[in-house]
Structures are given as structure tokens and as C-alpha cells.
Amino acid sequence: MSLDQLRRFTIQFSVFSNHFMLAALNRVINADSPEAAREAKEILLNELGVIYANPRGPRRDERSAAGGRVDTADIGDSDPAFVATEGTIEGGTFRFEAAHYEWLLRFAEPLGLGYGDLGRRRHGLASTLHFCDELFRLYGSADYNEAMGAAFAVENWAAAGFWKELVAGLETFKARRLPSLPLAFFTWHDRIETQHRAHLWDELRRCHGSGQFREGPFVRAGVAMLDAVRVFWDGLDADRQVGRPRVA
Image 1: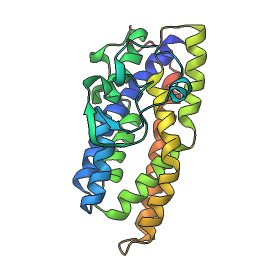
Image 2 (image 1 turned 45 degrees about the vertical axis):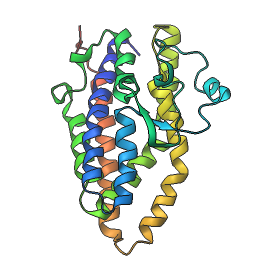
Image 3 (image 1 turned 135 degrees about the vertical axis):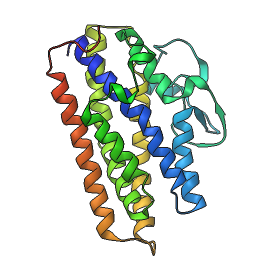
């Protein structure tokens, strides 16, 4: 993997990461109950920088599992290497530096990418924007079954190991090319997806037992969401193979 290829990947991933917040907000707005709205807010506000209130806090062994020492600037409890992956935003602390997108900005800095290079629609490939738009349309759908089907599909994708594959590749790049590269954005998300796996099936059981459940739209939305995931990754792969530098 060349530096230019990693820059390309980072730009597209930043567009997805930044625009996921619109889909998460849409999910809050279109929630079918106060309880569902609160669950959606847990995701959105944690993305924006509200640290989960975890009574026991991250243990020393959890810090070791997250990578041991901090490889970014010392920002205390906002550092993703130390931030809890379980708990609730109720009673949590807001930190600007704890916003997930700011973690990604810190990852991008050693690559020579600044705030103006990242996150906007104008930076997105058509494939990336398709994924973002389908997340907004399906994950945040006002139709209960569409929203649940899309969420179940995309969260299972996220929990199926792609973060581990990214971390493995980035660790190799860091060791060989750029020792200062902070990876905590990716390692934190890998840790939280491990926590999510059991919750996904609990959510499916509640959804299936609901009087609102309809199999057709649930499955169609899930398939459409996974199709959009594939478009995103196929677009990344095609862009990886382009030789012309995208960023100076």
C-alpha cells in the first residue's frame, strides 16, 4: 500500500464517517417510540463527542488491549485508546476531542491531509456518495421495517470483522512507513463492534416480536443496504488502482 493509496482511502472514509451523522440524526427523527429515539441518540451523541458514562471506567488491562501506550497527543479521557466502549450517554461528559470525526482527523494529519481535504460531499466518489445516501434513506427511514432491516444489515457488516482487517493493514503500514500514525480511531471501533454483536440479535428478536414487523420491507431494505456497502468498497478498490495522485 502506497502513501497515495492510504490518502485516497482516508478521504473516502472521512466522507462516509462525516455523513453517517446525518443518517444517525434521521434515525432519531424517524424513531417510532421514545425508547427507539433514545437508542438512536446514544449512537449519534457518542459520535459527536459524548463519552459513555461507565461506572467502572476502562481498566488497565482494557487499555493494554487497546494498544498500551497512547500514540496520539495526550488528550486524557478523550483519547480513543482509553475511552469506554460501553455505558450510556446519560450522565456522560462531552469533549470536542472525543468526537469520532476528530479522531479520524488526527489519523489523517500525518498523511498530509488537513480539515479542508476531508469529509465534504465534494470529496466523495460517486460510489461513496451512493453509500451515504442509502444510509440516510434506509438506516434513517421513517418506515419501521426498512429502518430495522437496514440497521440489522449494516451493523452485522460492521461486526463481521472488517475493522480487524483495516487495523491489520494499517498496523503493517505504520510499522513499515509511518511510525507516528495514530490508529486509535480504528482500534476503538473494532472494540465497540465486538460489544455490539450480542445486542444486534436482541434487537432482531424485539423487532420480529413487534406487531409492526413485516418481513418483505425488512429483507428488501437489508439487501439494499448491503448492496450499497458493496458499491462503497468496490469504489474504494477502483480508486486504489488509479495512478494519478488525488492529493499533493
